[in-house]
Amino acid sequence: MLRDIRAELTKQARRPASWLLLAVAVVLSLTFGYAVPYAGLSGAAGPPGSGRGLDAMLPGAFVGSALGGLPIFVGALVLIFGVLVAGSEYGYGTWKTVLVQHPSRVAVFTAKLVTVAIGALAVVLALFAATAGASVLVASLQDQALVWPSVSDVLLGLGAGWLVTTMWGALGVLLAIGLRSVALPIGLGLVWLLAVQNLLASIAAPLLDWVAQLQKALPGPNAGALAAAFGASAPGVDPIVGSGQAAVVLAGYVIVFGVLGGWLLHRRDIA
Image 1 (cartoon, one colour):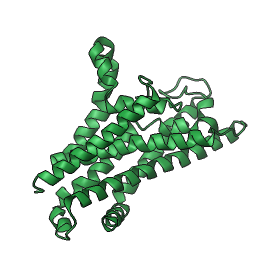
Image 2 (cartoon, rainbow, N blue to C red; image 1 turned 45 degrees about the horizontal axis):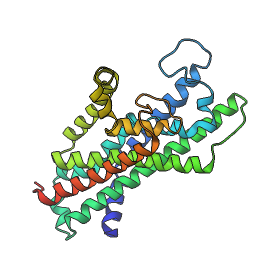
Image 3 (cartoon, helix red, strand yellow; image 1 turned 90 degrees about the vertical axis):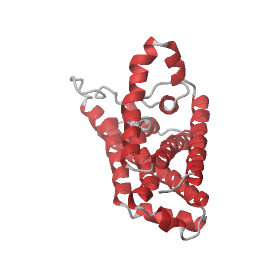
């Protein structure tokens, strides 16, 4: 198993797309969490997000800034990573090459899930480092004191971010195995993250009570609720449920996505 995990990690570390996705996640988080809001501090009318306020850009709020993009655009990038980890084997026709080395399908699938989880953790750590640095820069430019959140809040935020990103990555793995490709899973995943769940929240939920209740069981709204518990303020972030319920629901999705993906790979033909 450890050999399979090392091989999978090496493969993904050497893939330029993995680093590109990480870089895009950091750049987008800094742009919409700091650059645009900072440009709007003058009080002049600006783009959405430009009135976020100085307090939200200071070190004491950097955890929320790091988590703000996870329900939508950072989640979409991690989903793409998950699709690439599993779906590329179909695109390159390398499943048979991998399995002829004698690892079981379960071992290979587990290695891919572990790789996605490690990649998700790397994304969260990078976001925390980037937003912490940006918050220090803003505080220095505005002559504000450096007041940091408690260590426990930071660790809890890291855990919450890792849970959310791992959930999206596991969904990407499931879609790739279920659809045996790369392009279609990415397309469907992005449509869900960037369009469907926002339409449900902004249009359907206010009109239909059953949709509003259904929201509380969907992955995106629970990811947004967990981010909101740490002070995040971004599209898709809304405390529709408590942080405890959100964490339980998201952990449940990680298990379901993982078990279902492994079952599909084990039962179906790989061609």
